[in-house]
View 1 (spheres, rainbow, N blue to C red):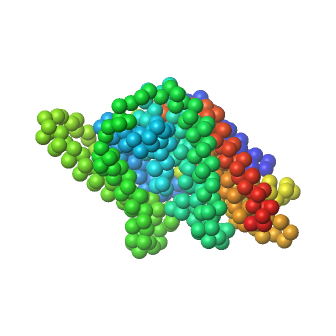
View 2: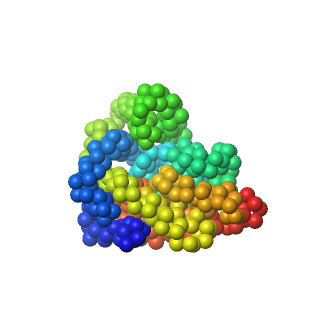
View 3: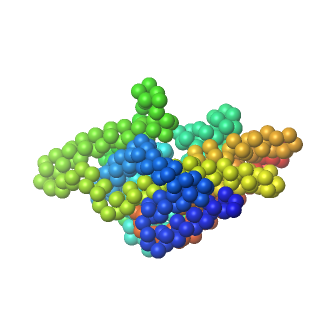
Length: 440
């Protein structure tokens, strides 16, 4: 049986398990084990791979990062803080204030390349959508889509770094070629997700009141995390020279979150003192208590499942085999350049996954004599379809934690974002054709 058929059958099986209410994290772990066994690995080797994936340093760093994200999300979504943020985005957005709140808040969080970052913005989208006649699936789609409008070109993302390296392209050129994807994503999110629901959005008093300084103080922990991504990487390369890039990246994010927690704690102490001076009482919340609630524990289990599945998938070696099978089938080069990243995006659920797994093959096809392919045209086609595969991946962390947070049905989330996905895919095809005609 072809390797790609094995991968797809296991995917369908995992989704079917989740459909009948089996814990998704356990379904993912089971799927990874089945892939190893189906790839011909002995039971002993499969169990060893499973154990190593559960003990991996990057898995435990990711869990720690997620716990801190949940706690910072609790701070930002406290009623007083959330109201300030909603007021600020609506003031800054003018007559488009409601749309600005729904779109800008997850987009701001998206500037930080942290795993499962959509979990950070989900409470903000929930607050921004209060009073609107919407569904959990719609809120999930709004949060998920706008969280990912930057990763086409934002140079902090590992997928972008890998793509720039493999295409041997100047960073400024890469960003210029890829930036229109963000414009298309924003336009699609507004037209297909946000605008149809603005008519039923109630007017709020916060559109004309609020304190900009207070809003910025609420966002300061997040700003601290962003700043840490520029400050800590050189330090960690010196302190952890033998660590993998993923471990260094997660350690960097974790340090930023720890600093963010310090800022958060100071801010909460100051708020409490101001409230006491005014004769008001503020309820004390035990740190990290939110992380042990059923919803948060469910999210952590999903994260474990995703990381274990990815590790076992790589150990199975089925993905490179599937790519070679597709090339050997004799399909047109342009189709292969779109399909290979798309499949890799669906299977891995991360941009660095589809870039690292498929772009070496894509660049090789582009460089083949007589291919007629040019770097810019190849890039927009491969990255656009790889990214849409990632956005549709049932193992994409942000999609899973968003769905889990809002308790949404996966199939309806897919249905809601499908017009946005098609818009980006169509732009990718159009840009490929235009750039090919221009010889770029």
